[in-house]
Image (cartoon, helix red, strand yellow):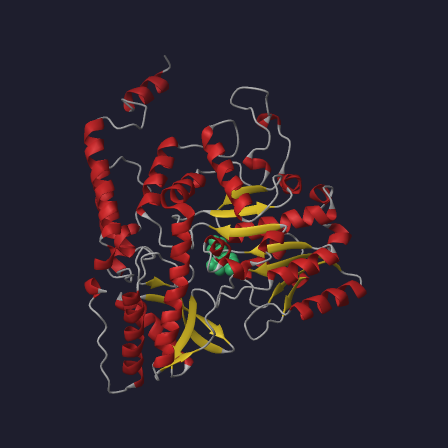
Length: 498
Ligand SMILES: Cc1ncc(COP(=O)(O)O)c(C=O)c1O
């Protein structure tokens, strides 16, 4: 044996990375699981979020670890330096952006998926069948035909981008994948409302059309796309030689949760021969609630729908999803022959359409498992009830804001998002948001509506209760009064009692 090889083998007594002592590992792993469960069960005892101390940030900056460390020591670092300073969206007081709360069920499903370490790019194995089952469920839920396809992705930003790419190939034909969008593609135009999420415009950039090719259509007083203005813009564009190819409607705008008139947009797209995509990042799953679902009328007419299970679906991050009515068009946008990915009649390489034919990823984790566990364990009725309750809580917050003279409501409450502010200027309200976040009592985010800075509460977490809404209102008033020098003292409820 060559000396270098002999020395190397001698240096690594056991080449495998498996534990040397399984029972020691098992005991520690059980403790980790217990701690993780306790972390969720006792989440109310912690602040929603807390700023990262400089010392903790500094402790994370170390050299690349060339030497091994004890797992217990690495776990201790995680407990001290990572876990306490996470985003906080597990906490019922988290109301910022659109973050789901996750569940203990999703957490253990994620652990089971990690144990299988399956690669869902393709091949013939049961984890792919789990993903296919969810595609079939979504097909049924949204009234899509049998030939519809679907795929898990990171999130709706990616799903929206992929929808633009599918619509692009569908309109330009498969050769565009070889030659690029060329002169024909340079004339392509897409449409979304001014309230649409910024990732739509970014998708147009990444897909090679440029952001100017996205026409941002005015919204009505309820923040819904002005369908007459959309129709007029399409006509103007056609008149001057542009090629309208895609409309993205919002099923739940990021600022206030407005839902475009999906039926009217669908009819317009059908008449014009334009791809109709729905960005349903959080709103699409409202279809699970019989009370909210009627607002989504027309979603079943979409050519594609993007949504996130990790938002209102309460699946742990990340679990975005794209559903495409015409599975063959979906495949044509991404599939690529490769000798090393050949399909066989039998064996592990059997099967026809693999997920790698439906998106840009070849290596793919088992996002479907935590989603499957969540859907099966809770059932869609219960998940739908959580969605309806979030909307009821948003209405409760609206009532509290309207009843409080120091607060001002900035937009009507359509779904689960409430935009309001303390009756003071933008600068004060910006400070209030940071004050409330740093207090650990609640974590709203912010946006700007009609030029005014807004405190924005998006109620997504299934753990959020009326008392959390009361705590948010009390904290905003308390910090608002402090910032404006008003002589009132409103006690925010103590953390543990919220
Ligand atoms: C309406 C809308 N579209 C798209 C996105 C982007 O989704 P993701 O963060 O999963 O990429 C969001 C995120 O909140 C959203 O609210």
